[in-house]
Image 1: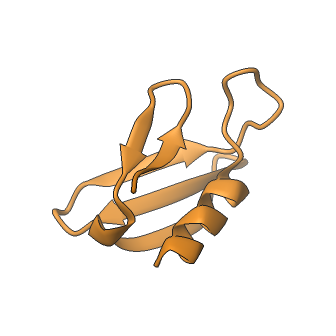
Image 2: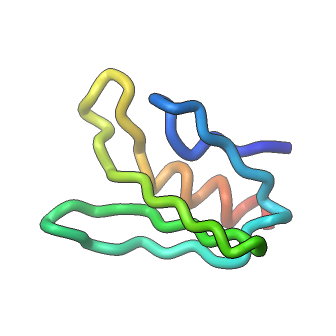
Length: 67
């Protein structure tokens, strides 16, 4: 099962490969940081008001429920 992190780029991850998940603030924006077991890290900005924006709280919930 894959979980889509970013709608615009269609970036999706396998929850089994996720090593950690953080909700962080950066330059006044809320972001979801997902670190993978391979060492890769992805950051997604919270922009639910945009047409192709992401709701990081929903994605965070999906990742937590999958683990």
